[in-house]
Amino acid sequence: MITEIEVGESQRLADLPSATPERAAQLRYQVENLRQGTSGLNDAADLPRFVVHVEGQLVPVVVNDDREARCYFLSPPAHYIGYTRQELAKMRGNRTARLVSTLIGGIERAAAPLGFNRCVSVNNWLFTTSPRLELSRAALLELTERLVQRFGDLPIVFRGIDLRAQPVRQLFEDAGYLLVVNRPVFECSDQTIQMLPRKKRWAIRKELRLLEHSQLSVALDATLGPGEEDRICWLYRRLYLEKHSRFNARYTPAYFRAAFDSGVDRFITARADGEILAFATVRFEGPRVVFALVGYDVDRARPDLALYRTVFAGVLKIALDAKKTCFLSTGNAQFKRKRGGQEWIEYEGVYQRHLPLHRRLPWLVFKAAFDRAISSLDTGQI
Image (cartoon, rainbow, N blue to C red; front, side, top):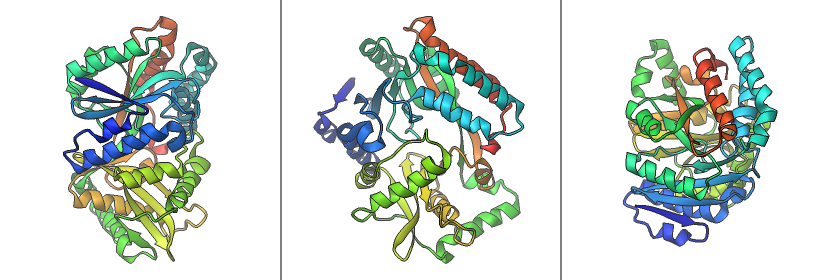
C-alpha cells in the first residue's frame, strides 16, 4: 500500500510507527522537510513536495517546475551541465574530458527549451547522498505509475541508485528506467584499509591519533548550542559554495538545526577556545555510515592545524568502531584512495517512456556521453 503525505499533513508523518532510532530520526526530519521545504532548508525556490510511505519506507518527492536552476540535486541542468563541466575542467590533459565538456556545452542551449529543468525528483531528502531504497518490483511499478498519472508531462528521476548488485539493475531496467551515470563515489572499510600497503596503514593510524593529540578539542558526538547552526552553516558555505562550486546545495542554518534536532545526522566538531573551526556530519544507515557534510574555516587552515584531516579522522573512527562501511561520497579522490577508499559509480534512474521524443532527448544524450566516457576519465583529478 502506498500513502502520499502532503505539505500541511506532517502530523500524519509523526503518527507513523518508529520501531528503530534511525527511523524515528528520519520521521522527525521529514516533518521539518514538509514544513520548511526547499526554500527554508536549502535557500532554493519553494518547490512542491510530498512524502510517500511505501513498504515501511519514507520516499520524499520534490518537483522542480523550472523555478530552481542552481542546486545540483534539484536541477538536472545544474548537475549534468554546470557542475559536470566544472569538474571536467579539473581534468587537465584528459582528452575525453575535453570532448565530453564540449559535447555538453553544445547541447546546453538546446536542453532548456526541451524542458530539461523540469522533473519529479524521487527519494530526494535534500541530502547530498540519498538513503538507499529497497523496493519490491510491485512497489516500484505502482509508485512509478502513480507519479506518471500525477505528473504526466515530467520525467520521474530516482536519486542515488547503487547498481553493483545485479538484481537492483534488473529491477529498474524491467520497470522501464533509463540508468544514467550520476557521480563517482568512494567507500572504505576495515577490510579495504587492511589491503593497503603497510606504510599507508601506518599513516592512517597516525591520522586517527589526531583526535587525541590535536591542538583542537574534538567531539565525535557533539552538541550544537543555541545559534551554533549559524557558525556551522558559515563554515559549510565557505568551503562548498565559495571555494568549490556555486551549484552545491545552499544549506541554511535551519537545515543544520533540523539535521541535529531530529537526530538524522551526528555532528563532529573541532574547536579552539570554544569556537568551532571545523565540523563533519555522519548518518547511520543500515550497514554503512555516510560521511555527509564537512566544513572548516578555510582562512585558518594550515598543515599544523589539520582541520579537514582531523574531522575526517573522526568520521573514520566512528565507522571503524561501529564495524560499518564508511561511505565517503565524491570529490577529494586521491585523499580518499590513500585511506582505503574504493571507487564505484552511482546512478540515477529516469522514467520517461510517457514523454515525447524531444523531451527524452537530453537524458538519452547524457546517458550515451557518460556511458562512453566513464571508463576513460581519471576521477583522481576531481
